[in-house]
Image (cartoon, rainbow, N blue to C red):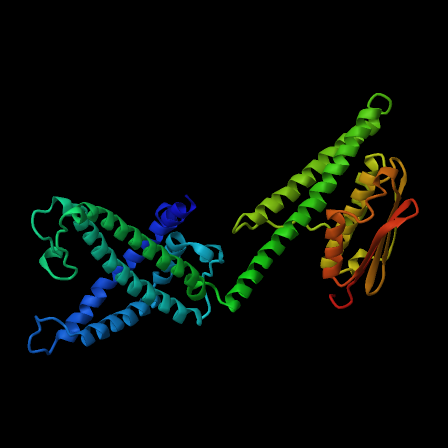
Length: 419
């Protein structure tokens, strides 16, 4: 039973027939070029209508293959060749990245593939025509009244079998078809293995594709970081403010009104941040990011206070002396640090924010007591990863971790070389 499955496997495989179509298409495209060269090689002969010699025929086939290969230089041919091969041949090439503009070294390989596709496809088409015709004649042998030959010629002349062999001829025809299918499957499998070598991206192309993908991922990571830091902070503050307002709504209506106003403001900020991120994802958008800097740090602190947090801000130096790029990143660090303190700190515990702006660098420190359930978060999550990345890009230092029951975040951002 296993032997029968092995023998009939090519018959049951869709790859066999897709690759067969690919080869026959190549043969069909090769015929006009071959005929043109056969005509050229017959010119000047005393009997131009006669048959071409074997040597001339071989030369015509070789010249036609070389000429057909150069067609890869024509506009659109390369693209269609890759698409056709990936769709019909499949194999490892289907998993390789598509290189829109390959290096110049890829052209000769692609020309060789096209020439082989047309040449081998012509051979497979010719064998297919002969084998299927002979199989049909063998299948009809029991019904034949006279010796049967292939289209009246002596190419593969078959005399009608006699006696018992006459009734066995259809089985021989079936075996011939099976042999043809196995041959096509073998050639197709070889094409699938050869395609990545001749059509696959070169090492240079792979590196360029990998770099382009890394650049795209970096851009997406930056957007994800912006979304996490800005929207995450706004939602955290809104949740805390809503909870605080609900608790004191009857006892302290004035505080509740302030909290509701802060919620509305945070919602507007979150909507603006979200609009920026969605605009950045939209190709050709002119949306720009809200440029919040250290000038807005007091507002950030006041917003957190409306959520019921006991937050102190101690700062020295002028934000005017800090380059905009560093000021923006420092604001994001403070925003994420305060957000984490609100999420994981002891409720109602003091949060201390300290900012020291010096001539060539600034120091930001945020400390807060940590709730027991959050002390296992020493390694930090996505927010801490984003902060480390921001600091690394600016060439600064970041330290974050537990000191007994207090979480400390300390960042140093140099800017002497940037300004």
